[in-house]
Image 1 (tube, rainbow, N blue to C red):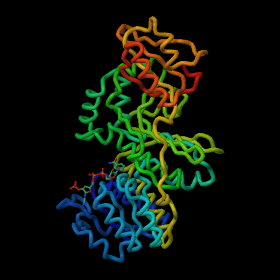
Image 2 (image 1 turned 120 degrees about the vertical axis):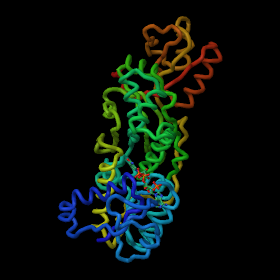
Image 3 (image 1 turned 30 degrees about the horizontal axis):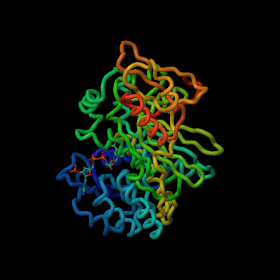
Image 4 (image 1 turned 90 degrees about the vertical axis):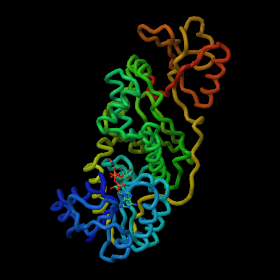
Length: 417
Ligand SMILES: NC(=O)c1ccc[n+]([C@@H]2O[C@H](COP(=O)([O-])OP(=O)(O)OC[C@H]3O[C@@H](n4cnc5c(N)ncnc54)[C@H](OP(=O)(O)O)[C@@H]3O)[C@@H](O)[C@H]2O)c1
């Protein structure tokens, strides 16, 4: 079968490389060679596969020999128009591009259905980690109640280094940029938008319906500080940027935020640029996927697995994806967490006000103090709905005149602290 790659950067060139490295295995699996016919890119020349290079998309669109198209250009336009046009001609399209999958996935899935071909997007979430097909196949008989993941290697690297070195956010970001783990403009990663798009795709897979990443509460890691890590260490916890979706009957909850997690959470040890995805099913219980969430060959490997699936499903639509019906995501205020609230001054004389705001009567009052710091202390609240927590926080500040410097959400079992 003949293949075209649109966008020959890190992942596109990785796809050509994986097809070459594993050509014998792939041949055995699909029974025919997969031949790279065209590479569409803006580059003038290529160091390898230069003979395939073209600059005009219509060549791919019009060539009936091309049955498989890989889109690794990134961005929404013109990726969407190119993918749509290929699907309308019955070509299978495989994309690693979370932006186009999140924004236009349901339309592209419908177009694939209408033209008996497939739009696959395994690499768009978790890079090389096989989460999309796992949800489609292995959770087919399950009601998925929760998916929570560390979905962005850049932020996980930054948070891991902050924990290891006791360093602040800005200097650790600079180090990540020097090492090539963070972009010069790091906003998509550190402000949580990359995780938010992936979380939206996971929610669409879970619900079978469409959602908008813009509707997911998204908070990045810029405000996580070395002091937060000192408190986390004191509690035996870790801080990670999580993307989470929950389904409770017909209600859907989702958020992206940095959370403190306890050591019994399978995501606790996920370190450095690695990603982890914890999935909870009503009968299966908890499972965990772990691996390289980005990078040339791991991500390209996921694209190649989609290419093989496309060859195996030629001539019919497989049905991976979701409908165009829109679901509503519950407001962030209706999620419940414990919170670590960092409060100005010392705890003396504040027990009553803190209890009223954050603690049940039977909960022990245990303010947390850091060695050598008399300007602040922290309390770990009982589980509260976010809207109640925020209202109580405001009341507490007004009544006591004490500022709450910062709070961080906490997920842990009672036995852990
Ligand atoms: N890198 C990863 O680890 C990773 C992991 C998972 C998913 N992804 C996703 O995979 C996609 C590709 O990522 P990447 O890291 O490979 O990006 P990249 O290195 O920037 O590659 C994109 C390539 O596409 C070319 N291109 C862009 N627009 C084009 C157009 N209109 N026509 C022709 N060529 C065009 C670019 O050319 P110019 O350089 O001239 O613009 C570049 O060569 C993105 O959606 C990304 O989010 C990446």
